[in-house]
Length: 482
Image (tube, rainbow, N blue to C red; front, top):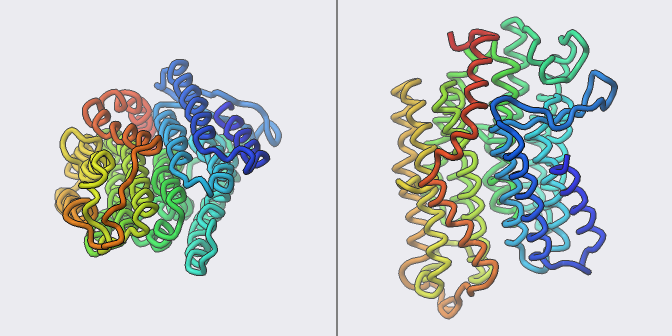
């Protein structure tokens, strides 16, 4: 429960104090200490072999309970959420702290709730709660284009949420005890036609949130027009809600529909891998490059999940963490560049390496992590995902494997045009990103690229029991893998 009420208290405190305490370092430090303490305490007190209840009390009667559980997969996503939030708070410009910080804390409540909820109605409520603050964060500036983009994002995600709610209500009506309990929803047996319709509701919500081609149309402009903190929250953490939902809620609640949807979703995901990479190569806006890069990377994660293999699920779990770290680092770096050089267009940049060497080193680490270079954090998970896709379909892996080549093209192009050579804009030649506490934190986050790349097994050992249990439940209950 502490992972819910402490961020909520911080949200209320930062709202009431407002400009009286608008120091981002104080809020970032409090968040860092509280978040890591709580997540590490969970690690010490759970074995993560099975989901263990940390709260299970009646909420709306005995059949609708406030039930929170934690297993290895949940813990990893809690680590991602509560580990990145302090860095996102620290990345703000001082004039936005009092406006954005309370919204970030409120979103943290929703995200933690989504990953821990084991009641269908509770899961839906937290899912929607996470939407409210990000809507206002993306509207922190009032440009007309930003408003249109945010409304489009809201409509897409709201339609998906309603579809998921309809599926949950249908399953609720089929339970023996009229309950939204995860265990009771899991016990429902659907016929093939029912499973297709119920599965479509879950998949629509999750594929929009991830997003998977062609449900991605809200994503590029939203990432580009949102403040850097909004882009970090959306891409680094929020899209993991969709990937988590795919694993925890779709696969286990509607396994009867997997045979129907599996080839369709994998095909769409692979199309998104190639499509996102090809579009990214043609972009000059640094944020738009990362937006399409994210579409490509999460397509591979989605495809790996649907292979229903232990390599695919473990690789997906690891890559969720890795993608979050890398994309937050990249958007943070782009935000620093834009604040200093007043542009994020590659045509206006260049020569940053000669003036800001430490920043360039940190930014380069995030680039090689995204490219999945050996010994970087992106390599182990991407290797496992491609291996699982190879075992599923050798033709699919040929196209999915293009992500290795195409990602290197657009990410190294981004690095070369922004960091190397001489500055293209005369007014920027004397500017540099100064060494301060924000840059030091940026470098600390960049070091995790190497740490995870060298020691990935420590994280895999945590999530493997959860993923193995999911595969066993699919086999034993429905015979999906037989």
